[in-house]
Length: 165
Image (cartoon, one colour):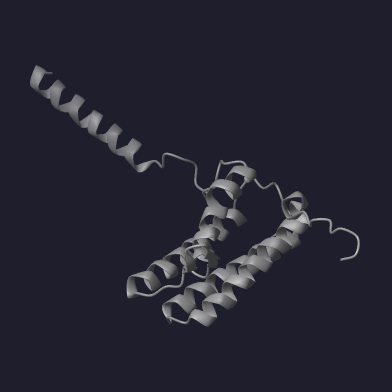
């Protein structure tokens, strides 16, 4: 065999091998799962996104006057919808997280409640419906608190009131 034919066969073999490797998935097939521990996922990912949703309905008074997070412009409403949709999608990540280690039907019900409230927030933002946004923010808070009371009660410590209250 000539040198030229050997080089051609070697090149073809390398191409075939490269194609076979490229066709093989880098990771085994199956659902993608977060590798973050649940505490990290909730504190650094989920909570921050929930706070973005709540920020659109934040109302506060201070020495400088009243402040509102209420969406005003079309871009604000679009951002409010995006924040709610992001939170909705994170419920799927939370549900499928290997880090939770929870095989409890109550866990799935709580996630479904959060997802429902986040979806309601997205729909209200899309419709520029501030009252709907408020209602969804309250439902989201209730869903989060309810889940915390069941699975992380230390997060929802109720303050002790002095006698006479």
